[in-house]
Image 1 (cartoon, rainbow, N blue to C red):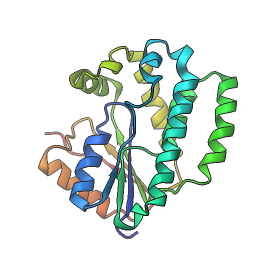
Image 2: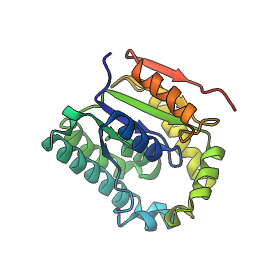
Image 3: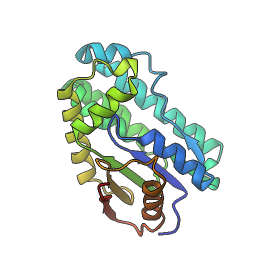
Image 4: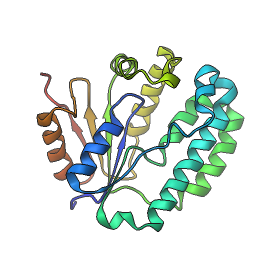
Length: 211
């Protein structure tokens, strides 16, 4: 596998996706595309009442990501390299744990229509962490709309992510355990860049050494 030109960073809330995406795009001289989380008008309501606002929230995210993918393709940013802090398929992970069975059927009909028109990354980097670690990071960054996020929901989300990537075969995949990993440390970032640049396809698990 040659150096990936389109790298997508994935992981649950608090995994460090955006931080890594920013640093990696700068290091590689690649374009950066970030998920438009704050622009979802249903998100704050969802955190307060997930059952009531789940479908609106998930559908907005799905269409928003699709529009981002369309825009990137039209601007031909892939030629110069691209790093994102999301994949198109991530919203389906959330949808599976928040939507009712009937809503999920409707959601999947829309998802399948859109998915076939979306370009796949050359490499997905999955940032993995347990729920306790993620909750500590979430509380530390203190985003207002995440204050009502429950331990139970986060635990369920972590399990859903692990399940999804355990069966993931669409692209090369680098799984990074971030429990004792801080991408802002120069040494940690350097090691991770090396792992990314030396990927040869398939699935690889990277367990950074505790410090």
